[in-house]
Amino acid sequence: MAETKDTFEITKTEEEWRQILTPEQYRVLREHGTERPGSCALDKQYGEGTYVCAGCALPLFTSGPKFNSGTGWPSFFAPIEGAVDTTVDRSLFMTRTEVHCHRCGGHLGHIFDDGPKPTGKRYCINGVSLNFVPKDS
Image: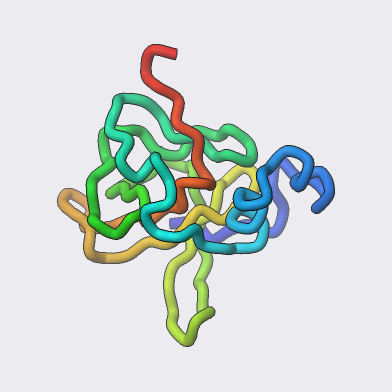
């Protein structure tokens, strides 16, 4: 996994981000917040399609590696290749791997080592940081 870069293809001022994102999307994507578990309908979305960044529309995950982790957040065992970057998150008195959008740097969630095969990874993603595009759209 690549570490998050200092600069991104898509950059905006705080005000520009606030104009295109809802307050909750801004809190999660730009301020590294976390949505309340079970609060997003995408957790139970299992149709075929692609999950894209709510900030810049970059395709991040497909529906194939999505699974029900029981955590209350959309979970995937793998992203689309090259779509996400990671950083070390030492907040909340623990060390975790934080996941970001490769194109705009938006905070998506965290990766854990308790996912299913074949990767054993659980990308625990804030649903508010995603938009779902059904396969036939």
